[in-house]
Length: 247
Length: 317
Image 1 (cartoon, rainbow over the protein chains, first blue to last red):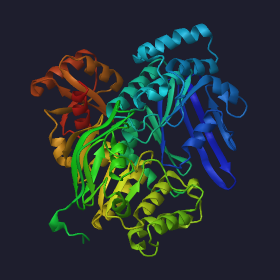
Image 2: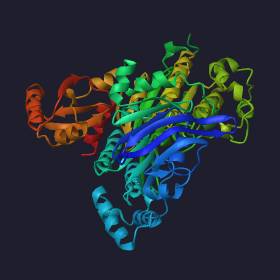
Image 3: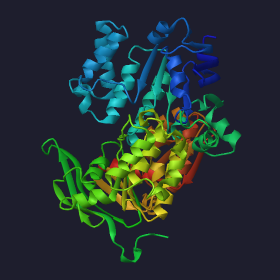
Image 4: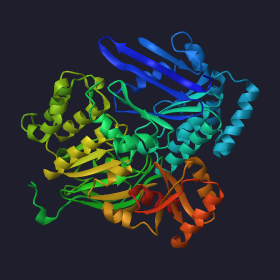
């Protein structure tokens, strides 16, 4: 099973009486772009925290990059990258300082940091901004930089938690170009988003409702199954029946 | 029935060359913005983060002074009559701004009290929305989900029966179902005669406004109804599909006849440099030669997002 990046079987997380994640089962192939969508409060964040080795499940099984979420959380952390819209880069450090800091945390050697840092800046076309404070960069640049930093240690899997909120339509699409590039290099991409047109760009999509995965397939098959012409409608059909709105 | 007398056609909001800069004039946030919102109208400000939407909101809600231009809200000047404006508008800022450690009910009572009214007096206006969060009225606002916070914030902005409602990105970070519900609520408020200025980065929501202004880099680029806006798209637009979509994008971008090409859900939206009719068969040949399978090229009507991309690429040079 070398080509499976993530596998979850009946993965469950309870907080007292509340079942945040309710026996979810799915798998993600190596190099796949996997869309993890669901309404606010459906349990996406909780599930993602387990898969990133930040939270222990109550029951069920999950393997991430070949490691067990119960026993090998530290190994998982070393083999994944993570980026979210809410927290990513330090605004009061420069571009290069952020790169050096994160690459250092991921255990890269000084020489690697220097080489990969320069390569990263060049790929994004921001070599001239190496000494600019991240806080003064446009949001779209920050997102692209945060993504590139999250994969600087060439992880097997990168988790993206609503990476593209708020930017203009062109920048949002440029960000997906980066995602495709990473996927072409064999990095598995696990992404959550509220933009349903972005769900169409994923190889497969799972839709969470009230802690469960209620649908899991390619966008084309999901649309066929629900007899609709967009992922937005698929999502609406599934999520409007959600009971858990108050989390 | 509208509460206000529409025959007078008074403007709810007017902006005349409003300019706002930051950092001692070095950052131009709003560049001579001019538009008008009619009474009872739902008017959308559509643009990405940093476009200047929030600065416009803050000038109109009298929280910021503009460097240049004039603006009125409900007939009052934003500089001279700021106190009158504050009494008759509702404002829901982009960042959740209620008291996190007060309960749902306490927040609502607090906002009613500072506007010299009671929840009971204007309950009719918020009832549809409030019943959805009433089961949680004893919960602290900070412990609510995103969708619930948004509903409470809207209730608090409405509790003094404002004439004009300002909603700055009310649906950012909110899931697709809650977004639909939120816009249904706005529709009902519109029927009560409340004028609404709403901003959003979601282009699909723009279609739900009476009129929209597209804004980028502090400049208003277009003002029209959603239907008129998409009619302004120059030339023809095509949806292109093939079996391998990622390769398709690369090949379409390097094709000499392509003016622009962007991913849109499950298709690429493509416009040709010229002569679209001859372009389709030529493009089909090109893609076939590149080895693409299941090629589909269909002419489609442009959407607001297509038009926004088109005019901002022009603005960017």
